[in-house]
Image 1 (cartoon, rainbow, N blue to C red):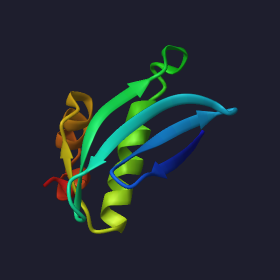
Image 2 (image 1 turned 120 degrees about the horizontal axis):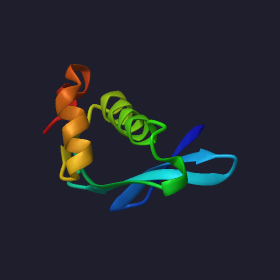
Image 3 (image 1 turned 30 degrees about the horizontal axis):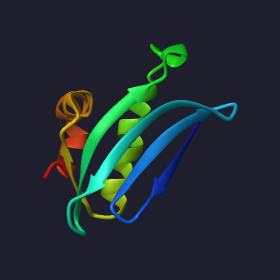
Image 4 (image 1 turned 120 degrees about the vertical axis):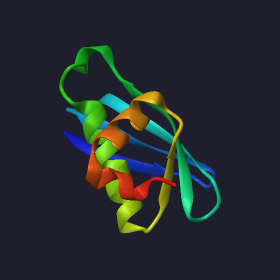
Length: 93
């Protein structure tokens, strides 16, 4: 499983790839220079139950920590995962 980031000027996403197939994706929108909003998390049906969503959230949180950014999780899935993991909560805006 490979997770890669595509960052555009105002939006971006992380995607999980398995054998060049997109297993899942987490989309975000920049809210200034120091924070971003997690808009949507999606796991493709063939990959459900494999923890893809969790891995995408972890990659997003790791990116935020590394770059000293804050996260606003509007996506209900992302919000619940971040709120349940104490080490993720430090990135909450």
